[in-house]
Image (cartoon, rainbow, N blue to C red):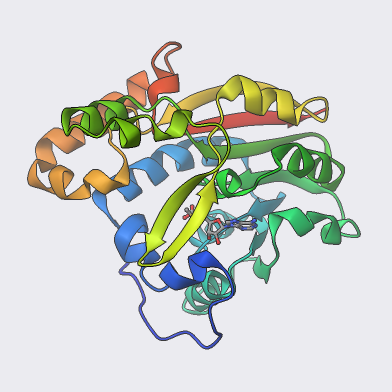
Length: 275
Ligand SMILES: C[S@@+](CC[C@H](N)C(=O)[O-])C[C@H]1O[C@@H](n2cnc3c(N)ncnc32)[C@H](O)[C@@H]1O
């Protein structure tokens, strides 16, 4: 973990559910053992795919950690999120940088992506850690995204998985089958963010996402993120066994791409090609 989280009071009133957790998001996820290990797994693919000089559209960018990682590598990024306070944290992070990354943060819902139709075509798109699971109509997302990208561009999308081995085992062992199997439900599941604040979350399998993204996109390859590394709500347990945790994170590098195993991960990292 490289940076300390910044915590200051934000200026705008909360307008979106994630606004309520914007100031604590980095402490409770980004810079935790589990959050950081899962993000590193995504960055390995991100860095393989997107190259300096390219211009990328990031959806649901949150506090801007990935956009600034890309910006630090010389990738230009337009990073959008529906939550104004997430964008405020992201802009603070950008202005705290000594070197100027070519990164712009904008408040924009994924459902409003068509507002970008006059931008020059992007070389790729990226969405990390389940922002797309908060969108009810993924097919429309694919339809709106395709014309914004040049043909052959990559869209790297990280969604929450549906058949998560850790989650099923953990909650079944605690006698809570409803929670163990919540991601199998059809339609929205309420995801709790804070007291009295929740978001609808939609879980999909890989085949369904690939179908919703065709014909504009072709699924090139995919892998799991967080197969042996558990979901982030097990951070306290992970912290008790740091050596074991490092072993699991290392094993994930080998196993999370293996057919048959990859679908059991906390997140699914899908690499699409714009047709
Ligand atoms: C779990 S956070 C992930 C944030 C960031 N991508 C990361 O890797 O840390 C989910 C993000 O999706 C954003 N989000 C949820 N629904 C959205 C929508 N309809 N349009 C744009 N952003 C959305 C939230 O505001 C939040 O910042």
